[in-house]
Image (cartoon, rainbow, N blue to C red; front, side, top):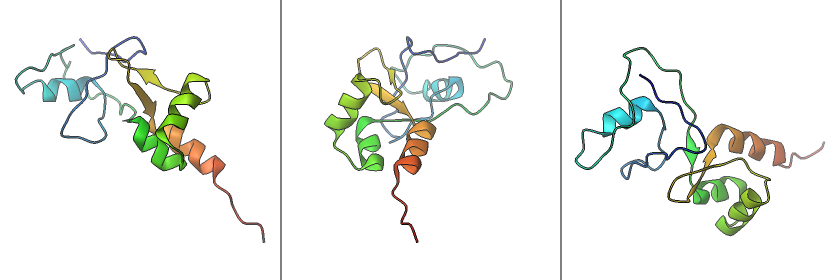
Length: 109
């Protein structure tokens, strides 16, 4: 059985990792620690690379804005995000970095 991530599911947070790679292998590997719940068992097959998710402060650093601005943009639908069961937003790293590259001012010669 493998797990899939949908916006309605809770995403595991690893206190020893600043950026967590969310996926079935991460949840299984970290479940060895006391108090961690396992949502699904790995089938042993190689899982595709799942996207990394960023915290609000990390997105703010990448976009050079305040965390409040990031939260406001997410609430207004300007930034993609997933919400954890605890109500915290997580932002897909690839999409945020792509947006930062698009917004970067390039000098004209």
